[in-house]
Image 1 (cartoon, rainbow, N blue to C red):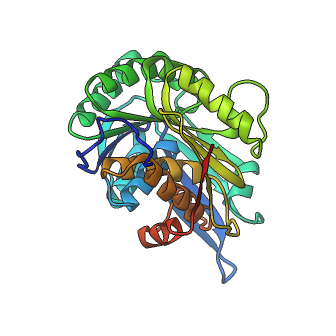
Image 2 (spheres, rainbow, N blue to C red):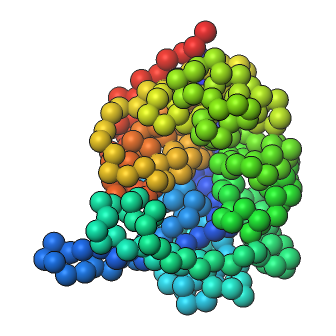
Image 3 (cartoon, one colour):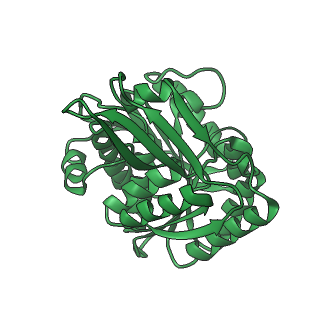
Amino acid sequence: MAARTTDRTAGRGTGRVTVLAPSPELRVLVEPAPDGTTEIHLHTGGQGAWVGRMARTLGADVELCLPLGGESGVALRALLEAEGLRLSVVGIGADTTTVVLDHRGERDETDAESGDRVADAPSVLTRHEVDDLVTAVLTSALSGDVVVLAGSQPPDLLPADVYERLARDLRAQGLVVVADLSGAQLDAALAGGVDVLKVAHDELPGDDVAPDDVDALRAAARELQGRGARSVVVTCSSEPGLLVTEDGDAHRLRAPDVTPAQTRGSGDALCGAVAARLAQGADLLDAVRTATAAGVVSVARQGHGTGDRAAVEAFAERVGVEALG
């Protein structure tokens, strides 16, 4: 039986996705060139940007709602637009976060993350900036199908109650809400109601849940459903992921094995793929199968949340799906 998400998605399929991206980053990577010199790369970053990137890769019409400010904001805006993402920009008084990573002497960008880095970020959005960001999300969402609520870094950059209000108001307008959150922001979104929650196994409620403990994973997912999530997607590191739908069906999804180039952004790629496929009219199980493949393609590449549509579709055919009794 196909996994249902919600009756509100059935038959719409406009392919439009809105992403709340409260913490965009301009990422500057310094790395050695093959000829022994140094290369400088400018990348778009932040959870919302990586979610939107994969959704766009899979053919969705994506609009990011995000705060931008200063010279770094100007540069990041140009990079995001070059990726084919539409932007609803809230101007802020602070500079957009800039992260400088020195890759020289490190194996890859993931290693560079734990080494020397320079980061500058706004500590908090002002009340007026928060209001404008909420308005941008609501306005963008009303012309689409699916809204992704991404978290902020630091967590108090955006007040947690914003997530409760947005989740409740968006669902009241018949929109599908996908969330990838943790901590107080997750609690708030659940209070407002979420259609599809993506969560990592090590962020599940209660005691630490092993990624191969299926019974414990299902129990934790059901707890989240009791708190306001209609369906839950649990990512489990190298173990098969878990989907628990609103009608109680559960499936494990086994991704094809690849050698990781890096792992950061793979969960965001998965989330973006779920949103894209739901916006295109797919049922939830098909969306999560495709999303599992998107995560595989992402980890096989150096770029966070990057991929190729043909590669994702090819790997999706190799994702194993097991219905659980």
